[in-house]
Image 1 (cartoon, helix red, strand yellow):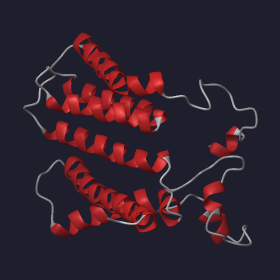
Image 2 (cartoon, rainbow, N blue to C red):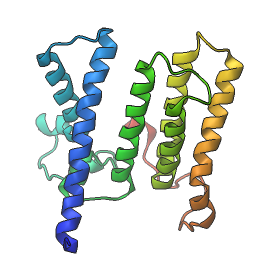
Image 3 (cartoon, rainbow, N blue to C red):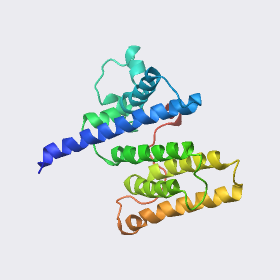
Image 4 (cartoon, rainbow, N blue to C red):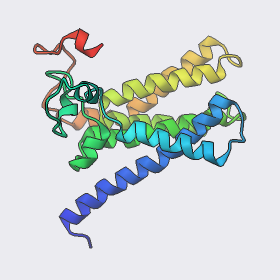
Length: 220
């Protein structure tokens, strides 16, 4: 039995470790993909993996640039998470530092898992665009979980999944089959999350405009 407080911090540490290991591996796979070769030196593999972990998990926002240039007089560690006035620009390292396990942290796990599935699907030349493709079932399930954790993640990751599927199969199958596969993937994902959509009561519903929003040039 683990007490509540140690168990909480153990959970945060586990999330950090899982993300670091999987992102390290994804960085290596991306190197293989970009170089179009299956043989990469150990040094290159280590460099690509460590670089991926740094930029995804530990690199901050552009707030450090004005601070280095002397335009920011002080540096308090939460300040990069408010680099844009009126907007939360939280970064993974800050979430880990304050032991935050809100939806955006759990969403990183589902996001990395979807990227792993897409990477394996891309490298598997025998996987066709059929009902026998078990990668598509895994994608539908994890996208459904992503919707339940943080609904916006399901939209962005869903679009990414459809783009990767289209790029992989565009030369082997027609647009109609790609469209049908995309619709089935979206419908299956929503079916996974449907019980939560029906029975969960969110304090804020719908999509609309924020009245006190940040200016667009600051986003650019």
